Length: 480
Image 1 (cartoon, helix red, strand yellow):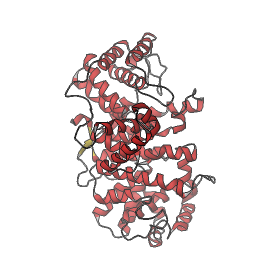
Image 2: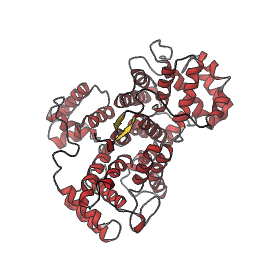
Image 3: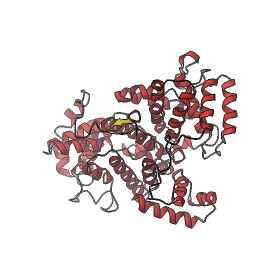
Image 4: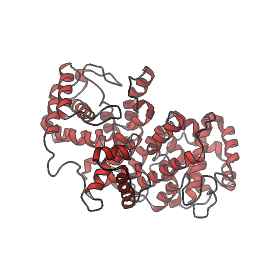
């Protein structure tokens, strides 16, 4: 892991907080505001500084696992973004699909992934434990009767209450939000905690507009892989797993062939790993559509790079990387989005990144089409370059890099550490991309029962209970 491919823990938390907020259809600073409210609650309840820090981190990562449940909520609500926003702000009309048996497994999956994210970031056991039980757990009952379990971390209650107040106030006003919160007192959070909130609620909400202090806790400046952010984003659409990693690697290998200096090459990988931030704002139904997109769908898709760029304004540490990543869909003839830049407005970095992303996408399977072979992708890209959409030199460098074997000391290759067998890694590759047991079995020429047996074994070895959690751990370990 080179320094150019890392990010400090606090910055990663901030980016993942924004990703979670956007995935839930919430304002991009919702979790930041919730964290400040939750910390106030912890202080008011007499918690020590370390506990307040843990509460803040739990609030920031509260929705970090929401990309993993986008598909499930899309099935229940139709629109996983607007639908979840309406659900949690209590503005959703009655929906017969929102039953506890339908929602609880998704809540548990979200908790599992959020807890795994805390582990990948090296956060404390308190933060991990709180995230794993924020929305209920199979070990501690359902989402109602666990509320007063003595072994639940207090951060859970602070974040639940603070999050509800911050979400409900814009939709219902402060008085309406407090009324709804009081209805949940003794059910979702302790009534005593609600009573401590009531006298301060308006003042605390008003104070959210004031600048916040920089975080300073043990390990906040430790380096972690930047790829964690890409991996979490791509849990939204299983067939995207590892896509940004592949774009980053292809861009890196293409840079030297395009005559770029090492200094120019370094930002390419970072931008590639962050370019998908805005993708979480678009409902899964749009991404999964096999027919021509409607105008309203295109409006959402064109805003993807806008939200990626917006992340750079919210988290200063990734400003230049997010800006470069947000240009990945621009085209030389002005037909790209969202800025519709042309020709000289796009430098070689932008041109190479755009070509690397397009070639990687063409060579990757999608639910509505098979993957193109590299010769077919090269033909298509060469034609696009001749038509003036892509840079000829960039396309030639990317195609040459894609044709060349990966160097022995470069690229992300499966890690043969003995944890999984070769067959289990093969099964993992298929199911992590969203293939059903039957689809994986057909591709591997084995029975669906054999695939299911291998998946069960993989779950046990990776200590996972869901496919998104399994995929996230497998990517982090270099198994896929």
